[in-house]
Image 1 (tube, rainbow, N blue to C red):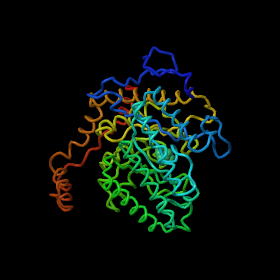
Image 2 (image 1 turned 180 degrees about the vertical axis):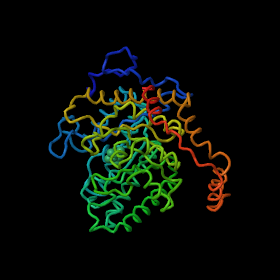
Image 3 (image 1 turned 120 degrees about the vertical axis):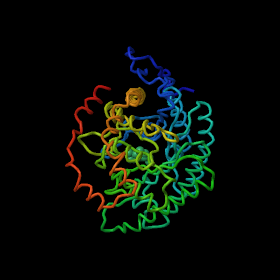
Image 4 (image 1 turned 90 degrees about the vertical axis):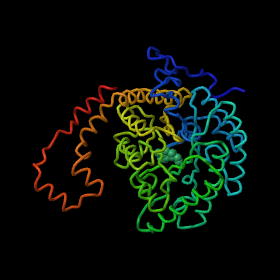
Length: 435
Ligand code: XLS
Ligand code: NI
Ligand code: NI
């Protein structure tokens, strides 16, 4: 049977001297860094939705890609898409993929159809995974595209919608479990509001908190050992989304008793939408012990929405990977490319260009990060900067052995503190030197 990617050869590592656009110049799966292979560090995943389900439509125009499976219907379309997806994975050599329930199955109008259609694709999907050795990084349920979710999934004013969402999560999580997935993601696309005027914010957050607890209970009930992640995003499609950034998610997890059960899947484009940098979100997750996975992509600095472009900023990726690897790196999570080619990038080759470039970029960022961890320059500076807290009054304060009075008395008798340089430009130059 002829495949959509037939005319493209398996992508190989050819090294930096290669000018073949369909080869890796930096991503070398078995290259060792800090005691692990590059593939083990990065755990690269291709996402099903942007790369195979989406046909290039936007709010102003129809699909532009003309992928053959999108012209088919039902189960036939789902299986043709599956063939193409795994042909792509086999050629790119990504060890993992990610999917939403609706990405892989025939469209369904009712709850019964949803369950039947999802189940109808699981055997062929499992067979393809076996055949190509591609593993599942995480699965998820799409609870934002269907009109039933216009006012949210579990945060909906109508509990019947929350019940439908429960049905989707139950089956998507069970499918993820069956397929040996390492994780399960909750992205609450409609879990927020369009206007606060019609919204009982407190009630909706309580509903989301209870719903996520039900999902955690179900995970334990079925014996799923994967990690659960919330994917923060501040807005779009809603005006406000309840899981707006990592700090907000941490507070939410604490309030609803979910700490230790759910971590975060950070997406750089969501980070910048929330007014935070990518590395800020990574460091917040590390600080709270909830770092999980990354949906690598980038936004466009000028237009300010979730453009989900393939990452290409080596400086940003180097810094983020430094903090990721230094924080312990990926365990159940990985590097999912939640990124899509532009609407004019209509060829099969374009899909490869996007992924090859992103994998090469991650490889370069990882090599830079490994070098930075080995030479310890940034950490050394941090250690020196805070050294005062290791002893004396600082250590007493942090051990809870000093009162406000004690600290005030100390200040009375101590020499006046002397401001010191934060060395920002020096540190920024250091990063530039690593690129
Ligand atoms: C949308 C999100 C979505 C999640 C999975 O902005 O990034 O693609 O990753 O539902
Ligand atoms: Ni995402
Ligand atoms: Ni996104």
